[in-house]
Amino acid sequence: MDLTQAIETLQCGGTILYPTDTIWGIGCDATNPEAIKKIFDIKKREPNKSLIILVESEKRLQDLVDVPEMAWQIIDLSEKPVTIVYENPKNLPKELLAEDGSVGIRIVKNDYCKKLISKLNKPLVSTSANLSGQKSPMKFSDISYEIKSAVDYIVEDFHDKVSEFSGSSVIKVWNNNQIKILRE
Image (cartoon, rainbow, N blue to C red; front, top):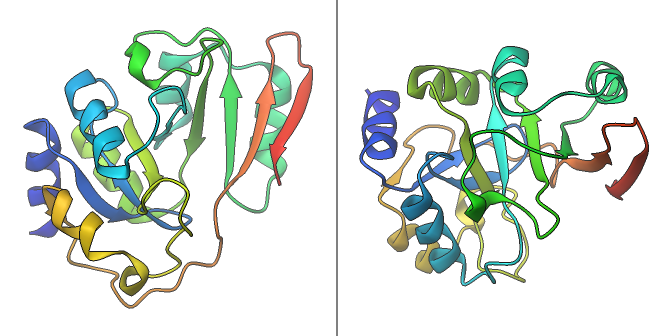
């Protein structure tokens, strides 16, 4: 099955091309520094530009960060996918963190992503399936050959799906509940 192959690839330190709750993404095990470096190479992305991670549950989110009350409110009220940037993450490689030590995390609502993360039993890196600086792919056919040929596995399902969202909102929430909208 497709899900099994994607998980095996991730467990071996590989990269995958997969559908998310927003656009197609390039992903890897978010706890594997070598796999994270591969994603920066695939995207030709500067290492100082941080990546976000996806989790499938509130519990996994709480394993990675202390979640301020304001973040819970944003998650509960948001109608579109929302990535929240948190301070002081726990147990994540430095390769994932922004220069200030923060990390962006989104709880996914997409069933495929939830199953993938749950069965992997680790957070998943997610970054748009394009070269750094290029337009994000709204559907599988928008992804360049260069990206498709660089990843270790391409999810076989959902190739005809067009994304409803061009990306998630990104909101930074400090532990004192101060917020800043980084991307609407």
